[in-house]
Length: 252
Length: 252
DNA sequence: CAGTGGTCTAGACCACCAG
DNA sequence: TGGTGGTCTAGACCACTGA
Image (tube, rainbow over all chains, first blue to last red; front, side, top):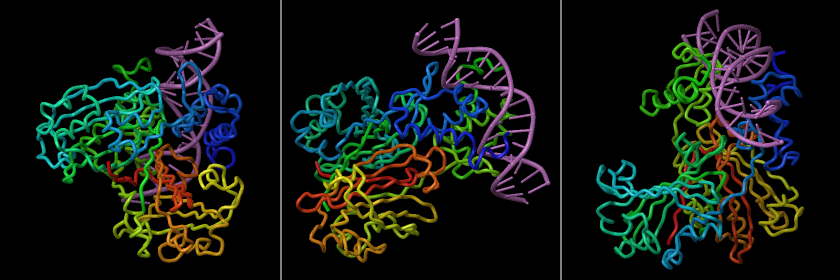
């Protein structure tokens, strides 16, 4: 029976395609359970590993989520809308709010594992901040958890010399956050650049964001520039791609 | 021997971690060949499927690429930088250039499978363009191939009524492209909104972009608005995430 | 043509979860 | 406690690649 697998494509792909069609047709709705390995073995007369391959393919597409001891379930996608421009408008942080406020509209946000350290500047960071490689930087690491689900890892880098003695070196940065403190130092951010990439997560990222298989991460590297065009902060973010839509608006 | 797998984690993860460390340490450079299934079986005394699982894990992370009959090779990441703002500045398309020109700096770009059709507006498109659902839209589908590798699928939607009789309904849109033609119609785009998402590709997307396993896609949905704030064009793009960095700049 | 990865079988033991 | 998915073995044939 092995041979070329009925028809044209491999058996496991055929089984996967059938399930995928069922999901898209709404036959299996979000959160609902799919036929398990045993069901597929019986229904299609295949071995265990073949049924597993079919389910693994759907997992790798992020369509489906396996829960040990329970079954395989259809995932759903209800993203957070992150406004790249308005959220960093001066009116936001100028008024003492967090830049995050613009995004979440009353959902339950927790910032955990806040960690402020002083470290040697990594090469790329030093390059962007235009400081000597190995010079000290203040690093603020945070994890954002929305409605119980971690959605974002953030690491903010600022020249240690610049921020020494300010609230930026404290876990709590005070009203308006880091940017308001920078303004008090005469280094108010007036321009931002964000670079967006996407890839599959490392094992560490996958664990810290509690990602299920088949979920990519989006990486945002943001640089804040002051009025003289000098970079004052670099923020490296790792986002659960299944939790976010990024929005950017601009003029022609 | 099965049992709990030496130490703590599953055997295949241990093997994968070892290879991953080797890659990160530069022991296996980009494009270089990794130990194959047979090597891993011998080196670790495991079965075929276990060695395969280890390699599959690295593929799923996008670190590595399997070539049938040849071996498993380390991938590299040399992205195209896509400037979200400058590329759509009026100076670009106003001067008769393609909006693409800003991105590629003399690399070999081919646009293939250009396809212009008239279709019923899909629900979401109709909603954005503020036309009745099922009303006719002009759809321009294209695929962009850079240095022989497909990198982007694009589908542009415009109200059929608006563009009837213009070059927009032709495969070639003339100097300055669609936006220059819209300007001639008195509907010059002045503002853009881009929404960025990321997920694993569908089978179709994976095939048309020739993606290797473990490569996500980025989705950009761009809406162009005219001076009256009316949406004139919606462009749905699918990007090979391993080929792109998106860049956005804006003021505070 | 020798070696590679791709697919497949038919077993096995385990940890976890729900009823 | 019974069923689920997670891991693992020891075989097999295939298509493809590269020398």
